[in-house]
Length: 477
Ligand SMILES: *Cc1c(COP(=O)(O)O)cnc(C)c1O
Image (cartoon, rainbow, N blue to C red):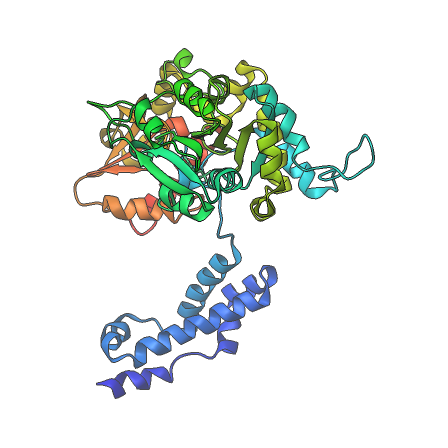
């Protein structure tokens, strides 16, 4: 058996021979030689393995095209893939606005411009242009953050996990921090309040029960070793029924009565009143500060709609202390994020501008009529591919995602494609779209594909239709 396939091994072309195939000769003109060479080698090797592998050999030998032209085509596809980017822009048709797997918040144009300019030029990252002396990278952001939040001081770190960690490490290491059992959350699998607390060196004292915690529970836990009370916004889950939590104002009164700190982890950085836009309320940064929290932490790339960053605003003495912490440098924010964050925060100085210019807010506040029109337009394009009988517009729900507003259901209109009757398998089409160029990520429910215009940018609509056409029409469908 094996011998039969091994004789085929002699038919495998050598690398040199493969590289003389026109398709690879053409690639050598535009891709790095090593990429084409390695792809040719890997392709030949993979066939050699299949032919010598007793299990797969029979199957392989029956179907393999061992001609140089056939192998060259495969090597060419591999080389194109190797030469392309791994991290790629894609089209998010899921309707989930802040999708951690999809890079969270797409940046406002002003932030992109600021980032590019800082990236390709020298800049005053740590130089005071006024005095000519050494400056702090934090100064570029602090004034804006104080203006928007009402806090005395601010510091920006790599992400919110770092912000919570450092706030605890700097203010409560070796001492106790009191937190409600209902707020011991896990965010995205690797951020868990108990673990972060342990890593920070603070001892966690849990109070209350999963569903109810009262002010007296906190008070009973206070002793001479207590450093702070921690309030965590349960940003990615919602408890209903018989529940009680203590609000920030009462917690701050209690904390200050015993000369303790109140630290509040908000998760999402919201500065805008969501009720105004018929969205469920989400605590705002300025409200926490006004209610007396000493330190408030939040992410830059959730509802704030900016780059990845962790922001701490609060009391000046505490912020100075955090900045001076040895670990601050290991968690520090880079110049690109500073540039993007500064530009994003500036947009918040005028609420109307923020809503209009920050993609996350544009998507959050998109009006139903516009979504309906866009869903119809998408359906029109899709009908050209799948036929009008299989395409329709449906009412549906978009989500905020990213551990924010877990209960919020944003009514939307979806362009839908029902795949029935023995054509391409729906899951296969979803995979082809994900592997396409640009990749398209969408929702599949049973045999129907759903495209939510809320998270598809208007200038992506044509590319989307084209990507769907290619995915559907290649491979003989
Ligand atoms: C998202 C979140 C974090 C973690 O923020 P990252 O910026 O992802 O590190 C921490 N706490 C809460 C409450 C969150 O919602």
